[in-house]
Length: 274
Image (spheres, rainbow, N blue to C red):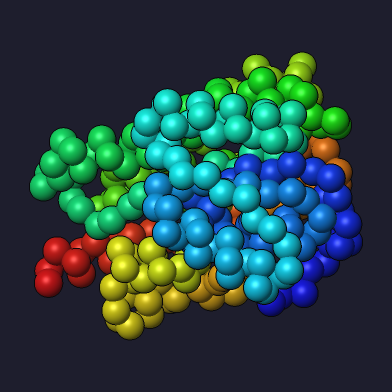
């Protein structure tokens, strides 16, 4: 596991909720918060994945990871988890909106269901969870923090992942809106834009083969394809006291990829040609 630059007890006593937390970056975030003293609950759709994540985390860290089954597309499940957090902890200090969905598809060939599925998870899901957790975050002992996970095509074109691009752009705008609306409640709201992170979901839906991986690598000036643990360090920073003057902003941690060009454009063209 990557050595952390932060004190082990940095988040001692903090209560953290992470959506999409059973695998990939979400699980990396959860384990990093646990390592630094926080209490953590994760939620996602698949019960078996959640149970497996909790078991593996306890074996790895010797710490308990709470979990609840939840679908961000179904508001009733979101509200039930918020009610559980309130009954279990009496409030919330940190929310990480990480649940997402993505796959290659040109817009002209994209079905209505495919479009709405990604928008519903990424944009609408972020809205639902944030709203449900708002009363809990207001109860935070100190300043509360929300971090929304976006992508480096949120403020530019998103060729061949247009559903995800539109959703992430909406999340970026929502991030800045909530930062202002909830400032008086001492809730900071920021976004993290990770680089290409090698998770199982990315392997299955985006980095389909070695050729695809090489294409992405060529568009990353420094750092290369990264991992959940490195991205977790960025999330820890945004939620730490050191960042208590930062809100309504985004941290781009993609190794400078967005400055070079749009790898999705090149990838998408190859995808169509094949």
